[in-house]
Length: 327
Ligand SMILES: NC(=O)c1ccc[n+]([C@@H]2O[C@H](COP(=O)([O-])OP(=O)(O)OC[C@H]3O[C@@H](n4cnc5c(N)ncnc54)[C@H](OP(=O)(O)O)[C@@H]3O)[C@@H](O)[C@H]2O)c1
Image (cartoon, rainbow, N blue to C red; front, side):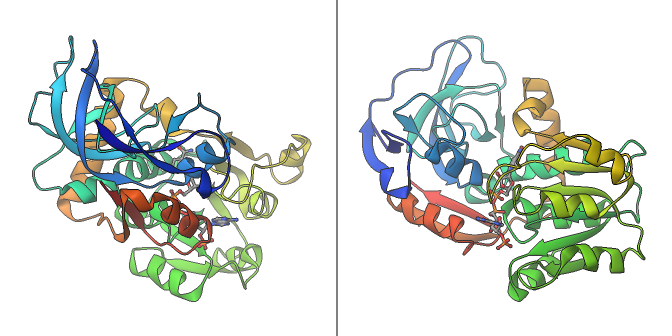
């Protein structure tokens, strides 16, 4: 049996219930993992509200770290007793023990603690594919400006550090002076408090009127239109989330008018579609965390049973860095 956080129907955090579930043996291509820590991500909110739909009842959670307890037929990259971590579909990491597909589960280097791993797999792999694979037509070179919204959040603080390591000038936005200070401490070259300042004017000012090559936008509805104003000609609007709600439909002609812009909407799950791709990306993440170039900040910890409070705090913009749930 395993304690787990489930929803029976879509809705607010009050739908999240602590339940006891039976956990069986892994089938072909699966493993059973006993979690030591589970990661909290904004996607968990979209799945709880039904913005992203899944079969119900649903155990939430896409990120975790723990010890492999059993290995199904055909799984060769993991063995019983291995320390492991993952960002993976289907949801289910808000639990003590689960059976899941092995494909996206990676062996964890000894130097990385379980709580660190639970706070970095989904967010770190996202920062990796954004900064290294979600690029404008002419690529990104050291010294280039990019704009990264919610720079003091879970994905954001990892992206600030990774961008610095790549030599990029990351302009971060965040919702308070304290959050801006955090983004700067972690490698952003500039920070804009978009709750008070006009980020379009500030970006123009910082870039000498030229604009940035890429806007990495996880906020969606509230920032999309203004983000287009921040781009240089041929720049890329890289949408990857909807913290304020989904972007409303728009006519492509606007992209011509603003300088032959590109728009993409990315998801991590396309990038980690195969075992080989997942491992290659995870190896890069383990390397930057192992070298200290990227430090994982766990600013909030909650017992698994208090996952609903963690959701309330995330949605109220009270969190910074990563958040983990402890089973
Ligand atoms: N597509 C993908 O592959 C992928 C993968 C991972 C994450 N994501 C997206 O990346 C974003 C960051 O994820 P995360 O888990 O690291 O979360 P997070 O950044 O720690 O938290 C979200 C942040 O968004 C900002 N925000 C702006 N408007 C908001 C609103 N109306 N409601 C709530 N928050 C708002 C807040 O920061 P301020 O107060 O500073 O504004 C808040 O702290 C999320 O949108 C998530 O969906 C996408």
